[in-house]
Amino acid sequence: MIIPQFNSFEIKYSEGQIILANININSAQISLCNIYAPNNLQVQNTFVKDLNQLLLSNSNVSRLIVGGDWNVALHTIDKKGGIPWRTTTYRDYIIAMYEELDLIDILRKKKPKAKLFTYESKLLKMKWRIDYFLIANSMSHLVSHVNIGISIAPDYRGVRLIRKQS
Image 1 (tube, rainbow, N blue to C red):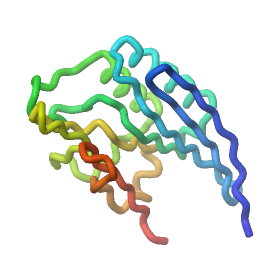
Image 2 (spheres, rainbow, N blue to C red):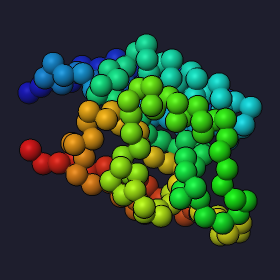
Image 3 (spheres, rainbow, N blue to C red):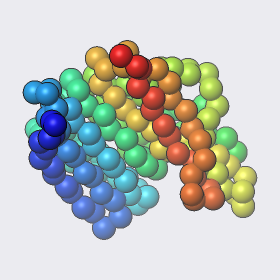
Image 4 (cartoon, helix red, strand yellow):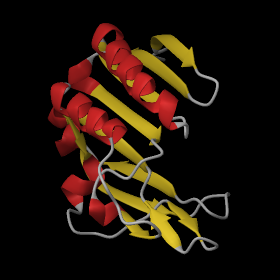
């Protein structure tokens, strides 16, 4: 029986959180990061800068998966209704971070034109894709499918990655 070894790091904000786990399985290190980004615009830029530094300093960037609730739509296709989509400094920092780390938005790679949303406000008549996985470009061939499905929260949907079978 192989017992994976791991170490982890955690950063907590008043409105957000980052958890990074480095897992060694069969002498291969995989870095998994879960984030819950703050809603507060004042904190978001610091959040993504801290995330970038943590990932650069403490993860295996070539085998990295970062996923969670980012609280921002990256592209115009990721928002429907409400105030029209526009770029923000926080969104631009996320794009710069994933380009620097050679990460990709796997859903956009697999489904470039799909209008899929993870959050819906019926009251405000809008939908957003604010939950997503950024994965190391070198690992993208390992993902056979990514989809958005039901969750226990009535206004949220879950994102699911499916690994290719060996």
